[in-house]
Length: 137
Length: 137
DNA sequence: ACAAAACATAGTAGATGACTAAGTTTTAGC
DNA sequence: GCTAAAACTTAGTCATCTACTATGTTTTGT
Image 1 (tube, helix red, strand yellow):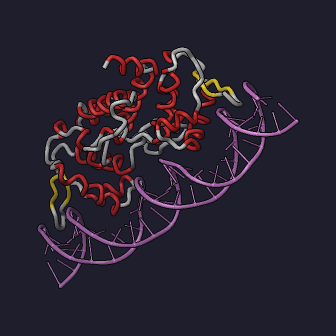
Image 2 (image 1 turned 90 degrees about the vertical axis):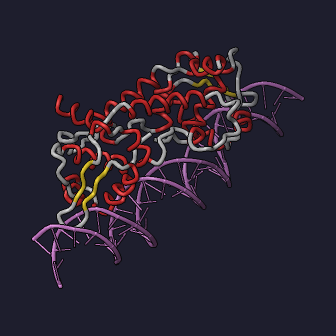
Image 3 (image 1 turned 90 degrees about the horizontal axis):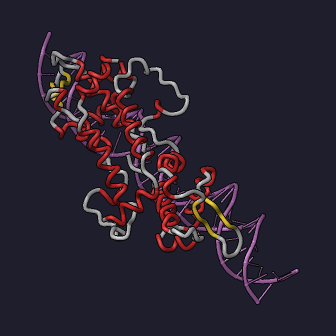
């Protein structure tokens, strides 16, 4: 049940942007250096996040990224679903896939509950929550 | 965050044993056939569960498996930890591994919370719970 | 003795994860 | 306009892991 580096790096990147309370631009290359992540790899990850409309990018020299929405308005379910591909613990819960064992499967309900449990946790947590928790500790 | 077939098949096998309310023996080959799982693969999985002392095996002709403890006494955390290898969502939470970013890592606390959230869910759920939930639906 | 079961190890093909390489496009500053 | 710095994009690669298969050995009821 391990999350990929994609998700971990992506989260770190977003947190880095969220830390700029003034909404100033942050360059991807700088984050990559600070966090010891290959910048090429991080670019792929950031690209995967673009369709979510949580990033605002300025191209060209002097450009960079900032959050397109307040950190308190970006929950982790959407982010994770995008980066991880699928959050569901088992494939029979996702997409339109139909499992022929569906009717007799005694564990299906359990997987569904676990799925909901994790989703709810992620949905209720925003980037701002993580920042606040960090400060509090 | 997908669970492997190891865990899914292992869970199905245990549920199959739990269904024998009278504690009668169930053969691995039979379960493999019923559930459409390769018996060789299922054997590996079952072997991984042995150190947990939740299985009682009778060898030789006419042999089979049954649960060594009541289904209500087998929680899913121990089972999953065994089959999945590690439940933790990120490696810096598991084992003695030390992450050099530990002190400055703003997401570490979050990962820890998520880890605990899932573990608690699994710990509070037993094989019996799953059977009961199935009957109720 | 034989068959049926549990027990055990090694090997393998395909998928996936985690990147690297090699570009193109946009824009600020000179 | 030229240059440099940044965002943007695609394709390829290497190693690890998943999900098996193959091939046994050992135990035990009949």
